[in-house]
Image 1 (cartoon, rainbow, N blue to C red):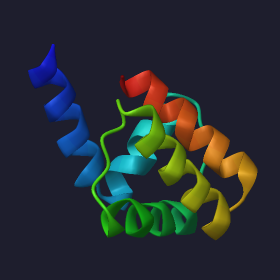
Image 2 (cartoon, one colour):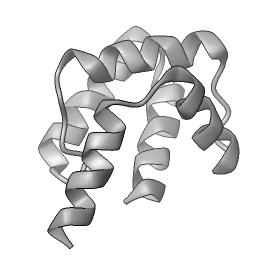
Image 3 (cartoon, rainbow, N blue to C red):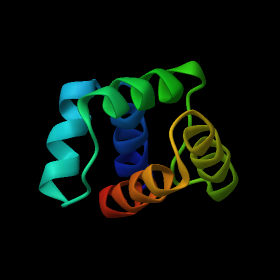
Length: 83
């Protein structure tokens, strides 16, 4: 299972705005083009292990600061779907 976690974490840390939009549509979590670009820049600032609750919470807080709480909640839902 550890290898799957590493693959998913690597994918999250290297995601592109286009990929993020694709996943958001796939999981019915609406985000805009601009939000996708902003979110990717936040995610890339510091690599995160989405399986680590504390790291994921910190990332969600950062996302809420640069977007809004609803978008952060949606991104958290998306992460949970990917896990």
